[in-house]
Image (cartoon, rainbow, N blue to C red; front, top):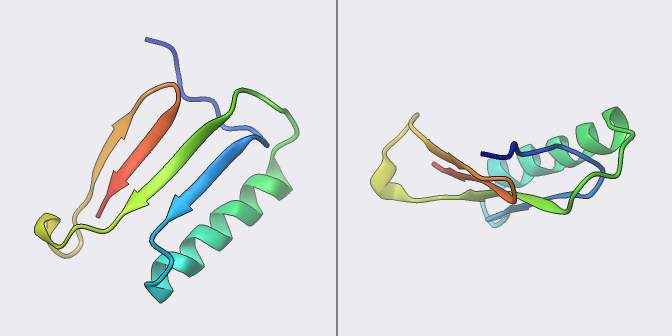
Length: 71
């Protein structure tokens, strides 16, 4: 399987109506912008809030085009 490659073309999508998720997404965007130099493939880190997952838990699904974090 091909790896997920972080690059300047990686997008971060999140439910930003929740303050803590919004702040986390902004911090991640800043860190990617400040820490990466390469323009690799376009891909996405997506954060989805699902109350069924329960507090302090998450699942992660990774493909070459997306990291889906459900929390």
